[in-house]
Length: 187
Image (tube, rainbow, N blue to C red; front, side):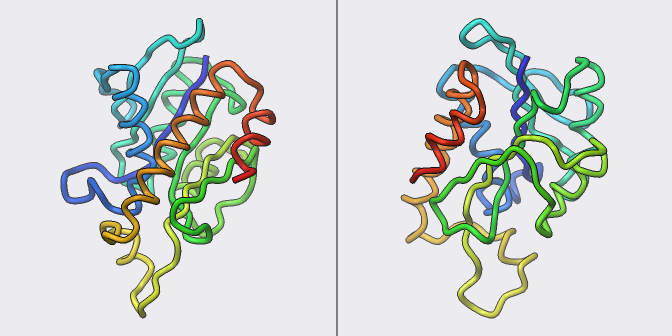
């Protein structure tokens, strides 16, 4: 069983904001496979599906970003999942818009959704897919920047990175994560 978690904030107000790029990847996967987030439990919306013979859970925590771990941990406990079967997708200020990077473990890097996930899982050793949102080019607090929509100039890069991230997730359905990392961290 694999679990792909897209981090973001619930509600229409946050739908197309930089902080919700993890949700965007989940939505891309749902659209591609004609799946639906038809279950509500564990402070989240999720879907349990099959791909290439393996059970796959897609999760969008509904706790707001800073409490994401409060949704991930109970779902993992209920389905008796190990951290090596979880991939968390989130926005990264330190990557340019349009870039993605996969890692097997790491710190929170100041990202409160990842900090919450680390706290609730009790480990830094879980797979991550970081999607670049770039840093603000104007003097704006980071908290305001991540809650804004992408600029018109960034739209093509955002669409490309969401599709590439979804491709990487699909590759992980039947390949070793190191192999997926080597393939998708090249570009």
